[in-house]
Amino acid sequence: MKGWGKWIWLAGLILLGLTHRAEAATATCRMSFSLEEWSVFYESATGQGEIRCSNGQSATVSIRAKGGGLTVGKSRIANGEGRFSPVEDISELFGSYGSASANAGIGPSSAARVVTKGTVSLALSGTGQGVDLGIDFGNFVIEKVAPKAPKKK
Image (cartoon, rainbow, N blue to C red):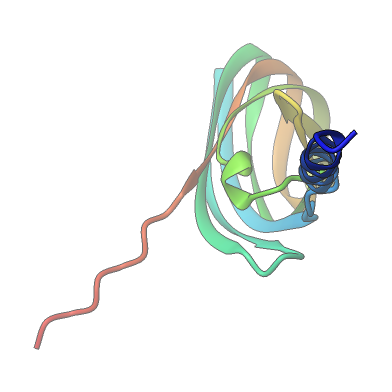
């Protein structure tokens, strides 16, 4: 039984490592954003935002959406908010999400949409101004904006 002690110790270390990985810290992240959109059968939207996570990570992002469907309109969201499903790292939030929506509105309005990318979901909501009517499908892309280089003197 002399040899068993080192194997039990090694098995304990492995289990400790697996348990630590299973309990890896997850962060909750939110995005504040603004977005301008237009559509006549083809939808296009662009905007910018800021993502902040509970683990201290943050990023300035650009947003774009493209798609199509039976839709027509023009709108602007000024104070949008997005809530992501929990992630381990902010880098999991960048990329292309699938989306679908139905909308109708004239003047001041509010909107909500959920977009997904693999295991990451993003619930978007906001208020704005515009005219919308239709059903559309497409993608919603979030890209990290590179920090601006300092000006040389």
